[in-house]
Image (cartoon, rainbow, N blue to C red):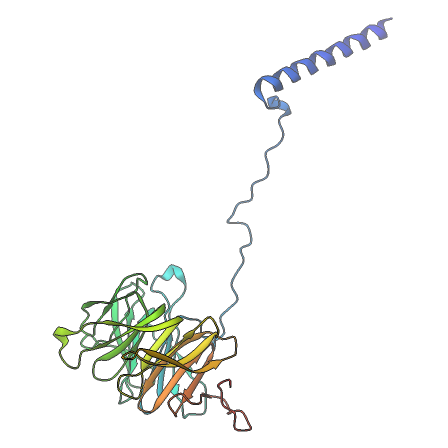
Length: 319
């Protein structure tokens, strides 16, 4: 009998506990404190393995990029980079000559982190304008093909603004010139001239050789072109443009704004980005992905720089 009584009491206790449990749940919507489910385990984001980007190869050219050449074939190329140290994206710089039979050589320029303008001067001096690692303006010159660089506070170049959305550019004196559109590319030319390119369908030329006090920027059309780069053509009033269209990933064309007319000369069928273009003397160079190519016949044919030309009379350009 005593055993049965104890069993009955235990059963009543269990029933009472169940009633209390259900009543608490109905009232609060959660389990009683002692029965509450354990909180989900939270992973410290600092302890979680973060994906890392693959190292950039020394020969890899990641846009945006700037390009310059002089009539002697000396070339200066740079990725734009960023002056913010936290971005871990300092400019990368290459130099060389198209007749050396070798690819361009990467060089160090510790005084500049973001390249916003560059030029190979007629005598071979290399010049870059941009921002140092403190985001302060700087102009650097090299007289030894980029082996060393010195600050040049008295010189200047036509220079992009670091703000990609700003409609202005800096002239060689460092003054702001209003522009028709935000520019993403600049090609500095002799006698204080330059050609700026906007992201899509528009470029503009500037000229300080006549009267710096009356310099202005006028929009010139390159309809249907994106990722645009432009430079001066060899005939007066003409320009070379390089960019992508709906039909072609990388299209090279001749623009005559006075007509206006843009005539495609070549569609490079490789799936490579049109990054930059530059001209001087009778030389024309383009940066097609990682490939630097040169034309000596006004863009009729292009040959790779630093590589053996393809056999059977072919050139680096797609037919």
